[in-house]
Amino acid sequence: MRKGEAEGVFRECRARAALDLDGSGKAVVSSGSGFLDHMLVALARTALLDLKADAKKGFYRTQALGAAIGLALDRSLADRSGIRRYGSASVPMDEALADVALDFSGRPYLVMAGEFRGERIGDFEVQLLQPFLEALCVGARLTLHIRFYGENDHHKAESFFKALGFAIRQAVAKEGTGVPSTKGVI
Image 1 (cartoon, rainbow, N blue to C red):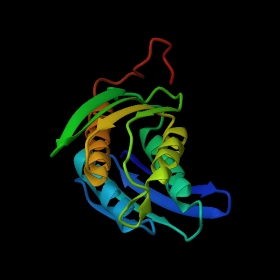
Image 2: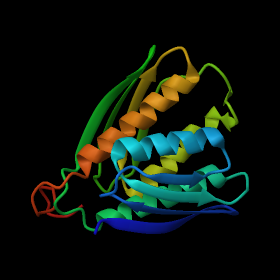
Image 3: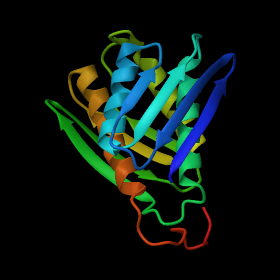
């Protein structure tokens, strides 16, 4: 059973997440932002993981939610034995394209290349996407590279969340029994 639950705390904010890596893509998310909820549902559906997540009100709820989801993902992977470890995907959405590559290496790192035109996408401040992803990487002990371009900010963000989902699905696929590392540990 590859399931994990966690609470993320960032400054005064708390969030909770529970996920099942071997789910069917069901998601119930309450982040305080309809746009972020939509992105996390898209991620869960493309990753084929079941996700329940909520964040309490507060300025740092986005980072707390990223931390909670990352920690739940880390716990669901346990010692990471039997997984493929690496994943990558490209997802187009109309004029936008996102490329995502990741490694469940145990070393959290985020590289994000792309720009947004506006300050908001619906009810969400786009400047919060990078801190959300950084907290996710730290919680999941994940190296993540994202490149994106396009005209429409919503399309750019949705394409990289969907690409992230596909890359996660690929990386956590069961492949053998050992820990996928030359050192024998991640």
